[in-house]
Length: 254
Length: 326
Ligand SMILES: Nc1ncnc2c1ncn2[C@@H]1O[C@H](COP(=O)(O)OP(=O)(O)O)[C@@H](O)[C@H]1O
Ligand SMILES: [Mg+2]
Image: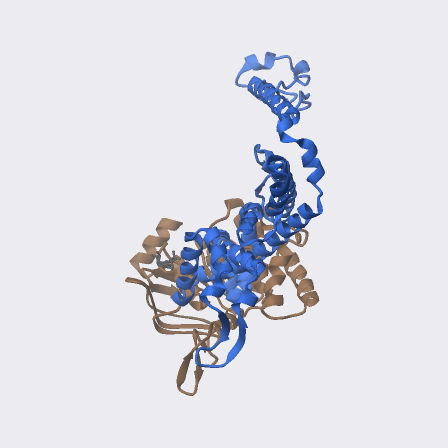
């Protein structure tokens, strides 16, 4: 049996006295789209950040693509990774943020080509033509030279997705990618994500867009209070949730 | 600025009145609506201020130009004296070199201050505390007299190999003492400016850069500093202009900068005021040039960020800011 793309075993994380993740267990298979839902403050962003090595976990084990997050195993010893090695791991995981976080002093095209050239040391010419194709794919082929503040929120988020894809990631993490958007701009971003899912990209999506989750997700994970309350295919979670907490959350949000 | 003139509004008023609920409005003379003229608000205060200021300016200019005590002929005669020009050259060179040292030092200090490593941020804090807490004049004299305190300068590992050894008397000339004094002091002041610039850059972008696999040094160089520059440039312009005049302190360690060289002339001829006017004319001329350069640099770095910039004339003479047109 092959290893799942992401595997969390009793993952725990605290900020000071505040225990944010209280033993998370869940798997994401290669090519799977998993939607992470749950009330605000339940630890969804923290979990994504742990998967991308932006936070260290305190207990349990977290595997991404077979590697233990934060450590490298030689024989039966675990060595803590150096910042440089962590950067390499991060570069294989794409991340899209709620607030887009585009580099404000760079054009759309420069945003996309920056990391492949700087981090992966790939030739500028090759990276640029790939970036143009990517921006074209997200529907921004005509806005290559626009600066972020000249783009709408939906356009900025699509550039951010192209920027993450330019690194050819094995896994894409989305943290509420449409929550900061005006309602009429949500659709264009979800369309891009839908087409990514159709192409077989492994994705973990934190979202409040239940229609999207129902339609695209292979699996929905409901988190509350730092724990996974229940998970399953969207039909089951949205149609016949087992837990009272899930029911209460869904009735509030839909 | 109000360049808006009386203008015809064509086609702004719709042909058919929209307000069907209010039949009275339909009786408006639609045919003449497109000939309406906009009359800007009158600003009498502006005109009164202009008149008062113009009168004051004429009175002042007339007084200065006709007062024989200013000895304008002496001013013009000495403006391009070789000694004065040499002094000007030294002043300019000291300003540029000390600012250069200060800027490089300040970036290092600012990064150290922000670092979470106490062995970096505490020494940087102590540096700032010392150099901002003591008068620059004292620092200059101190550096100049370093040879009394430490006759021999040795660079090496204590109890280990020596890389460099030299007599402080040979190394510390008035010139290097001035550079050290001004540069190290400036580094302390600029460090706070650079730190504020770095802090002004949105944290989210740094997180996005980390998520892309960029390392701290790369993030600083490619993402943070280019955007921090926007915040750093305006106060750096001020610092440079301040440095131009601060260099006049080096006369205490017998360096003949602009001020010192006009004083060498006036101590001979006793024409103190006109020669000080010569120095002022040069200081003002250079400040004007620097202000213009600052405006251009700011415009360049405003790229990708619609920020408020001011033209050099406004910067110099005051006035309201305009948004940078894109
Ligand atoms: N860096 C941090 N320091 C301290 N507390 C944090 C930090 N990040 C998140 N938290 C806390 O952890 C809890 C979970 O946050 P988060 O993972 O952002 O939840 P969600 O994304 O589900 O809304 C919240 O109570 C939040 O205040
Ligand atoms: Mg969140």
